[in-house]
Image 1 (tube, helix red, strand yellow):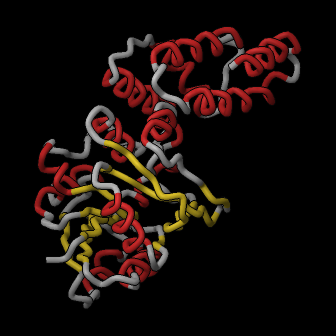
Image 2 (tube, one colour; image 1 turned 135 degrees about the vertical axis):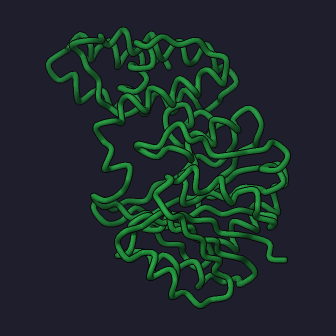
Length: 309
């Protein structure tokens, strides 16, 4: 029995699919399976997938486009290996990804879900470094998906123990990975490797890019799920404040700098056990400064707050 399964859905990713598949198959270890689900592609992805001859590749085909979460849920509990790795069809694994992440999970049996650093390439080029320890990851998770999908590895025993499934409530843009972490925030210990093991491709056909117009409303919905799961009461205005802070899109016609600072105080009062939260809040508040050029009093208030935090 292989130790790991890489689970991936494909929808109209033909230009990038073979490079992605090759990057998984050319790992420094060979003891794994690669389950690929074509989710009703119409661009040639299905034909390309059908041509794969490596015995580790298990091919599945949806007759119609069901979406990432439904496609994953069809097979998540059928996997028998110790670890489940996730991958996106337009991204690239570095050769030691599986080996190094398995070593990390083996050395940290208390960790249920982990990820790694990622190199962004294409329209944007930079390296994203994750928080490494559980409490720091949770602090980041309050604002964004702190373990991105193409870096994810899950301990299968926890999938079974907690009957874990991907949420189908967030499909446009797809945020099933963020919802998965939220659902496990009270249950799993998280961890990350600081090593770059995945290359994430940025292009205008990313599903998250295609649904930018829905981003605000969907992020507010997922933030509500997050805070509800933690037993934190939030109003619609507070969720909107949180979204504007998280994505550096403050509307100073609607909210004052005092509103943002009060919200940050509220977060700190509810999460006194998160050692890294002040650092994360500080980073997001600093980003607001460029929006306050014509508001000197607001700048003074923000700088004074930053000195005290």
